[in-house]
Length: 265
Image (cartoon, rainbow, N blue to C red; front, top):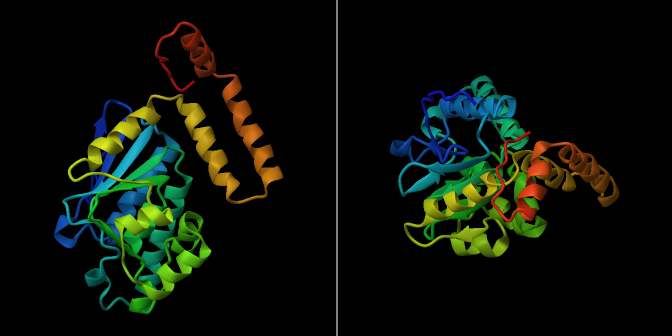
């Protein structure tokens, strides 16, 4: 992808193939405002259009207080119904673009992930967390409901009954609970979050990129269809990898007892 500057995001390319994206509004706990909606939407669209050398994304927040505190309620204070719907339509585009992103996205949750912040995390492929992070979908306490796919992504992560408890109460839960329930994959030791997230991102980026993207596409499809049709989809995705140079390189490197060098073609 073309490196560009965003008003509310900071981008850093690590080891050529790993992109670290930092939600960068620490003065408001990285709350999601309209500009961040534009920035995240445009970032995911660009990665869909032309990922370039990027093979994995690590998404985190600035500071040690919050990953993302949710929607910026100061910006929303006094919004007309029309303005609210217009802003939410942007957030809907942002969510759909994130879900369509072919590049794996790993969330490194460095603090509170509330409301839309938790939904952004749930839109990632999986998540690691700092020990003190807290999570919640608080929308019903504010007279609305989750609207950034939370009622779709949360049940798929934690199960329907647990998701109902989380959404209908609006109560926060801890990193330990998030891990036990399946909302996150790992709790990292204090100070180790980004090191562990980057280690995993580098592992993903070291694998064949076409294989990774096809596997992600097939895994996502598994949640949308029955097993027979899902397997048919998997076969189509698999066949896309057969005619690649990377398949030849993978088998060759195995037999030559060396690390493969994948080129994404």
